[in-house]
Image 1 (cartoon, rainbow, N blue to C red):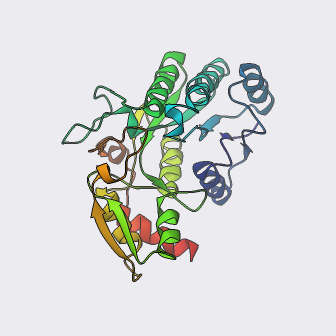
Image 2: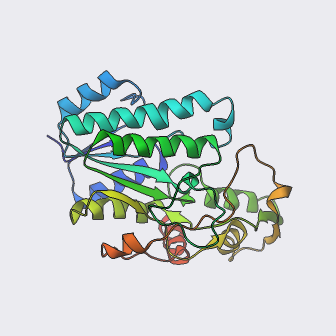
Length: 280
């Protein structure tokens, strides 16, 4: 029996979880999509029965938001809905806890205040619709589960906005970045620590929202990333960067429930500084 089974182990959160669990000296098995196809119900069942984990940490997802609108639409649904349903139902059948990662894209981004966990969902793109359906599958399964919504994820592993800005800055003296979408950046380390915190304190099962504290536009985020460089960052509107998938304009999720568990959430600026220091 292992303490944890990580699925989606090659993604940016999956790799962060492995790093954290190594530090915590947890016994775990990390599975990539090659090791386990979560869309294959029988394979999921056999793996869980073989490993007998206490918890499944579900970091597996199809995250190509724009491709999900057309060429990746079927795969988006297969992974984010069918795969999630398989994990949740197998977890329930084997009395295994589950931590599932969702997204702020389950909301439409028209709320000028903050979104609470039980506010009505209204996803406006295919990725958001699939992640919402994944959430519903987890709830319907009856599994002992934590659903953790997050947003604007960055970290050491994989591609993300921080690396994109740093790489562009090497060849562009001037960068234009969208300044009319507001949200909360999230360091994978903070997210991974919160997932483990919920398990550690045996928090009530249900839906939580976790990002780093404070709010930003993508322009604000870029300025902070590049503040020690000579690059000139200029604000532009979303209209100047048309994308296939709808992006929420004002996507700020309440962190009060997460804070209520006793978890201390660093500001996104502090998280970014700690992250940049960690990769120097």
